[in-house]
Length: 155
Image 1 (tube, rainbow, N blue to C red):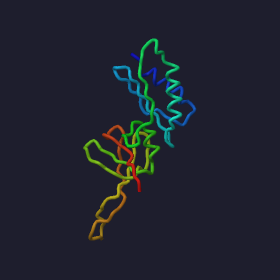
Image 2 (cartoon, rainbow, N blue to C red):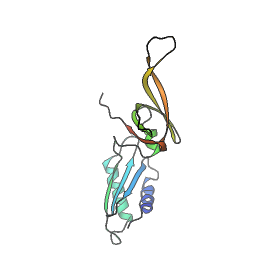
Image 3 (cartoon, helix red, strand yellow):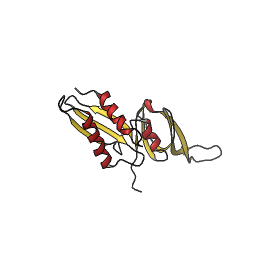
């Protein structure tokens, strides 16, 4: 069976000096390799083809037959690596926290494993009779949420 670390090393070699980053490498028991890459400005099909050829040039089909799929991380899919959070700062995201509570707002900042989402919600303000809509910052840890994903909007 093909070693996942070998595939990651090959992909990292191709990524060196490029603005792309590795999102995920998956290997199934039936020798299917799925490589997901991403870029701040999106992924071009030509680059997926180039990476696919690069991987095939560095793996031997004589040793093991495999199926290879190279693509971009899906736009509406949950984030898998910190770089995806960074790329979507200022954009609307949905977070499902560990308590299964959904929060929807603007990804405000990312610091290491922590990120902040500004959510527009009703807040009781002293001296006002009715709650007022305000942006409230919610802090999360990437490894403690069920998922975070970009909200696609056609406004």
